[in-house]
Length: 150
Image (cartoon, rainbow, N blue to C red):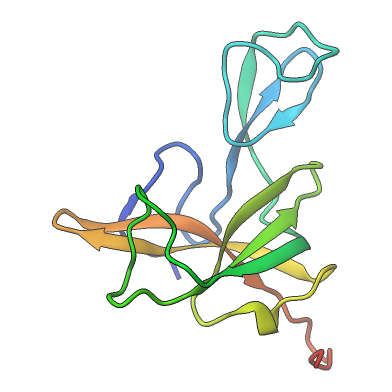
């Protein structure tokens, strides 16, 4: 289900039923970057200066995870008052990047394990006077027939 709202960071991800992160691929060495970049290639072995937008894989492997027990400093905007802790996951994508993001609503560190699969979703990050602000999050994927890890 697609979430309506305005991306909290424009140009970093798509919305819709199958959202993706948007990265940059160097046209000279094919190295992929996230967030999107311009100017010069961050690969020290490349002098490339041109990039093409590329959609990154929607699924990856949980590389690490933690929780945010304490409210992050500004410019972070808390969704609730009082602040409610949330989980964060670093997910390694097939492109070789590790991307950190919040974990989807309804999931916490007890639902995560290193090596498990996660899928990109878009959810509301916060709401302000002009509406909802959305962001990518990582949703744990449970394969059918797989027993839950305790």
